[in-house]
Image (cartoon, rainbow, N blue to C red; front, side):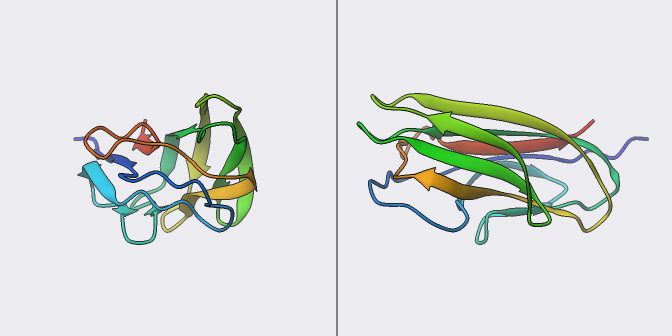
Length: 128
């Protein structure tokens, strides 16, 4: 029997001024295995294995925004959403040990856009 672990979470309100720290995705859509913490925005691996992580950050108006997928404090991949509400998607396949932590962190730029009833700025991950 295989272990099933996966999550999708999103933000429910846009920000024209977000410009530092971790991006927290409080609206949990799925959290199989309970590895994702919506209050801090961090996924903690409940078991070792190879995981796939996906982030989409939607740019706010005419602003550019760059975010990173981070593993234990080290940036692994970066996204960029440019002007006119562009999407900034990226994906990372990461080998994790039990207890490793993955989150989305600000790199440069300003703001993000989303919808409250169907988030488009989202963070997902799953064990393969």
